[in-house]
Length: 156
Image (cartoon, rainbow, N blue to C red; front, side, top):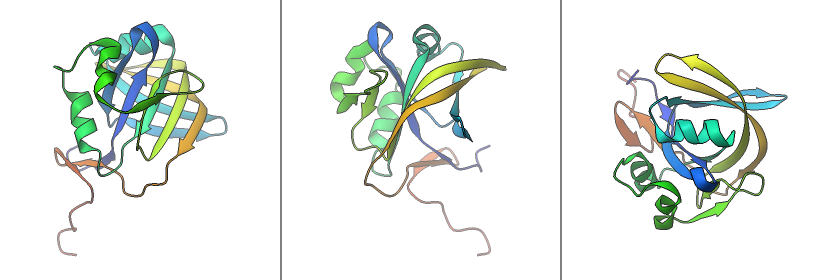
């Protein structure tokens, strides 16, 4: 799977369960109705937060936001809502989930289904609202590293 490039998101939950987590297991599922999915490991703190609140926010990170991706992947960051004190964000208008400033796009979702995915749960979310920023290049994860562009193909 290291040869499969993915975009990077930060998934977030509001309220007493407030939490964020870097995730690259995220994709669009349907346009009508608008559905997305994300996969979260069962032991992750975000897993219980999504199960409790039944909502989540998604910030799609730009190429210059690697520091945010690393921050929300760091298990040593403050727990709960305090982890958002170190970053710029706004509460989503529909869910209150923290949406990170400067992202390429934002989504707010209601959890509609949970599927077994081995050691992960597959969360299917109905998009309540979406917003697109003015920025361009996406942050990618490829071959175990964050990247802003894919390397040239061998033999190209």
